[in-house]
Length: 619
Image 1: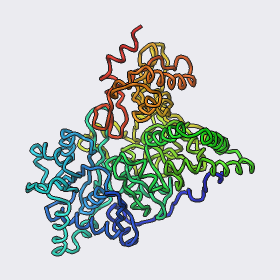
Image 2: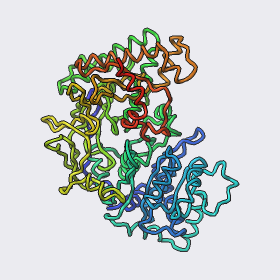
Image 3: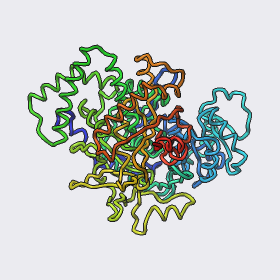
Image 4: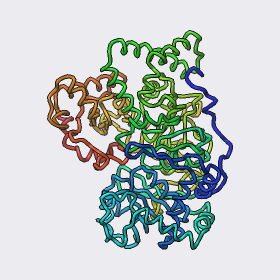
């Protein structure tokens, strides 16, 4: 197995890296322990700027002191409305160090959503990234009497602003420096006063229906879980990660910020979400965590580049990936890899596979982590054939992130692995719903005791809503969401996620929603990958004037039909999709059809496109 990776570097670490039973306690120990080492790096105006642990500590202390000088009290909530930037981390750790509760708001949220989240969390201070986010806050400020100040990270375009309740981050830090001169130990005292049982962060579930719910995580749960992560996917001070997913989402907050805080892993912030493919090649992370949509995008980029390459390059890739696939199949089957095949793999690396990894930016990666949504098993196999293990994890906001994980020593594509050592998992006997219990499970939903009681039963089991199956080795497989299982008019139970994942493996399809509950056959709503489909249309001289005309063109319709035919071959006749509809409007995170993590909302899509769905069932 070592032909693909060195397992010694992937072993779990059960040793405690930092002491402390709250996030501030661990952070300040890390600052003292790693003072001159670089922790955070961010690219700005084409240049990378590094921040050591001590510099980060100085910023956090000044911001915390600034908040305290303005009357911020222990237990009060402060929220951050910004993209994934270094200042987000500073604000988060400052809020916690001042004894407060830290909440994140998606930068794509509308002003009305900002108002709801600030009201529900009783936010007293709001950090915003720039003038765009400030506009949202100012629009709803009159409805938020509990909010005292708005702090702006980037004042570009706001130099002439005069508002007594709005100040820049620099101004807040200056207030903090003045406060520290009079109260030199104030922040450290506030941080020391934090207790494990104190509420630390709120993470609002994006959800696909209803208003977001604020999941409450206590300090003790965060600390327990972040230590547990190192027994699942170990990393250390020699590793580098890329920080680009929303920090208000549990995945980047726990797996990125807090896990790196604990282990000392360097965090590299991308310029913006659109520059991820370029930034990953610059950073070349040793540990790379992303959602399936990113892995699909990187794969499709390679496939498109391959089509544009010469015959010799295509032949070299074809032979090389064939060798990699044969080895990957042996590794997955726990079978030995012969010396001859190992030699061929080394040649395959030199011919093509190393170049593919460099093109993606994973040439230094020890392992890849995928989660937050199901991923096609074929995609896991492809990355494994390149020589990089992809490990699937599963978890929820309510489980404080990853709750299961596939070990590198036994990868099973399509599985989310066995339960992590730090929590229990079982399947409900009647419904096969996945249940989780452990100190990592959240403390409940803010202001919604009835929802909390529905989710956590009397024995402490969290009802996840995911339906699963478990094999003889204890490996779990998600079969579907309880609310998403389709039962056709003929009585056939269908798990749409399997079909949807296979469709999303296509470089031309970004997302898909299978329809068919109580209907005679299955249909699907598809969101195309704009960049790749446009490239196809240009290469094939297909005329189009805009996104809608692109989706309507007969050539694009035929292209998607071919992808659908490919997927249908894998399934029984009753499980095959008969018709499809392409969304004709280009969606972004601001659109109601998408969650902030860029997943189509099944129920809303079915409601909004009811007429198009009905048309697919007309004879």
